[in-house]
Length: 225
Image (tube, rainbow, N blue to C red; front, side, top):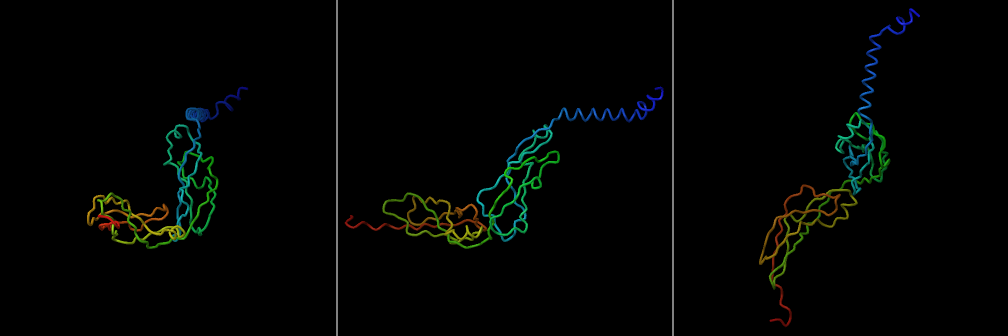
């Protein structure tokens, strides 16, 4: 008994005291900063899209990410801190399904991804197409009695568009923002812009469009004065 305390209790006493303080400190840290869970909805980012392909899915897919971490950090977490990335390297055209796992999520180091909804994502990829289409100006307005629009000219008269092949092939023409020609008597010119209504088709190198409206007198009705 006389050797028990020195051999088993007081031996390396300084290290034992330090261990107790370290354990107590860890307990304080955990007890004062409990673990919490939150959910964040973020858009899915597509990386390394093959040069000859376009995403043909119209809606921007989103993912609901459930993350776990220290409660204090959870309170400061925003959607800008979490990214869901899908690598499209080498993906061919067509309907493609991708699994969404924790490996696709980029989050701050102190957090852990617990769940991603949906667990799978399907998108459509189509070959990229560039094509030239005519510009059809959109003219509105009220005109003096006896006058009507004789001709509408657009300069340039065509524009280049680009997008998924199937969507580009269905575009008949680009149109312009509405041009209000109210009060025009002879000839009036306006500067506007052209666009395509399909959200997946874009105008290549958009620039100003000059629209000129040429008026003429309407022919009098038979029997008129």
